[in-house]
Image 1 (cartoon, helix red, strand yellow):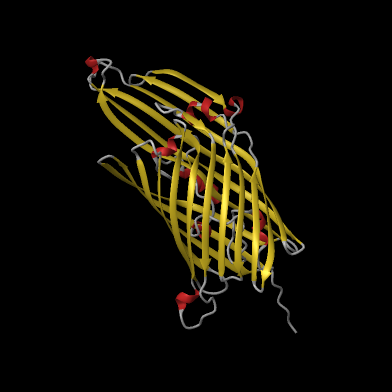
Image 2 (tube, rainbow, N blue to C red):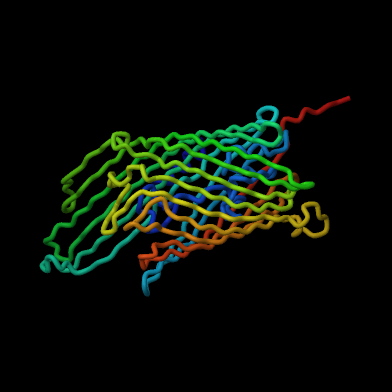
Length: 420
């Protein structure tokens, strides 16, 4: 509850949780899922089972644990983005809390997880000026558009293992957030009145996610794991407020409507993953995720569409991820670096919407590592993400460098001491 309040405050204090001109559409840019552990491997995790880290990608994975273990994960996320258009360049930096998750066992072969993490972020500031060719009396006209906010997700999950190979999990998600978008036009001629139009969205959503993992041993200490997840599409509730201002203080139009009456929906999500695991030393995984927002209804709500000159349409998004991690020798007593875990990955993401009939593509590579701290499986995870996003038909390109830090805490609880 404490961290939920921190997230809610961060949406309204004027800071940006994310910054990209492509977040103007829909609910913004969807946040890369997972903790620093997942994101160092390109964001994979649907088919990963590891008793040293909390895996929030698949609720079925939390049964992979030591029987008496308690685990927690706290992450921070930052990004440096370079935007280019012709000979123009601009730089922006963001920093935010990424996740807070705890997990512990409930009964034999069962486990529980609860946490909060970002779902999407909106942040942009666009401005330009040109000559008003339709009315030369007004001279130059200046246009600006700004947006801020995001959607966050509180979740709770439970899972159980059957026959020591099949794990099944279910997760309840509550999404909430505020998004504001505003556009303004002013004129060089002071006699021409400026105008402003804006939209404010208060978003709420309750949905569920189910997951399963099946682990098949193939050799001594090695196994193949097949994982799958599905998140249900459910209606978005909340409010949409639209306003128009002509002149300085004169409000010419304002109305508020329930999003439920506009019939807008959160997209569903299907994920499939396959991994190869060799003890705790090696993991290689490939994931595919498909999100269907084609029936979201965003096209009919101004706060979501912001179409402008290029028509916006919600669509089907796809993501391909490949990642791996290796630990040279977890028990080495001479060389500290051999006890560290090293990760690398790559991904390709196609947006859940189209602009002028074209998806916004993103491609990137990641590297990461976990430094063991103190005892048990406590560690400090660090990840780096190098990528590029942009429309093929647009001159605006976003080159970004992301970094994330995760602190995973591991301890043995519920032990009963015995005395003679």
